[in-house]
Image (cartoon, rainbow, N blue to C red; front, side, top):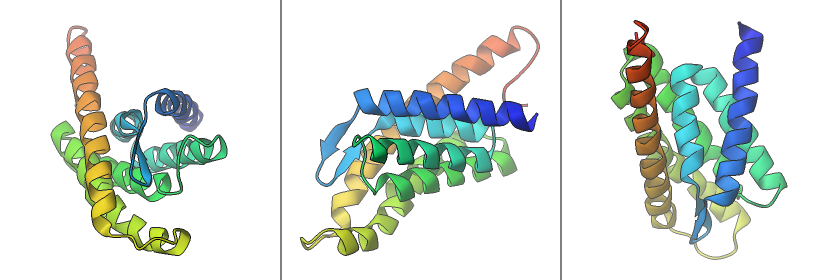
Amino acid sequence: MVLKKWLYTAMLIAISFVGSSFISVPVGFAKIAPVQHLVNLVSAVMLGPGYAVAQAFGTSVLRNLFGTGTVFAFPGSMVGALCAGLLYKYTKKLWLATVGEIVGTGILGALICYPIARLFLTQQMTIWVFIPSFFLSSLIGALIGYAILRKMDTRLKLTNRSLFD
């Protein structure tokens, strides 16, 4: 079972990397990549918080190595994946996992980026540069992820199984 979860994690890293490479919009010093947040939510719900954080980290590494992401992808995506994973693990409520991704990335991840920005960027940075872009990116991605997971659950219920039981 562990190997299977790692294989799914690797597959989700690939999907997130490719999707984020094609669908990203630069906003200020950050690039909004809603596919990353969609995949964060999917991995948090289907695999759990640890695998979701590993997926977010792996995707961030690849995006940085290939120049399609920034250093700010690490705290944003990883905190969001962790929050979504923990909220789903302890409540089994998809809407709370979705909120966890949005708040974890859009607010907490953005707040963590501020000291990193001060360290790496020479311009005077304000926190308000990160919160709108991170929040928008995670909102779009998490809502799409929510819709996909809901649809998957509906399909599974036709076979008397459920994604969220």
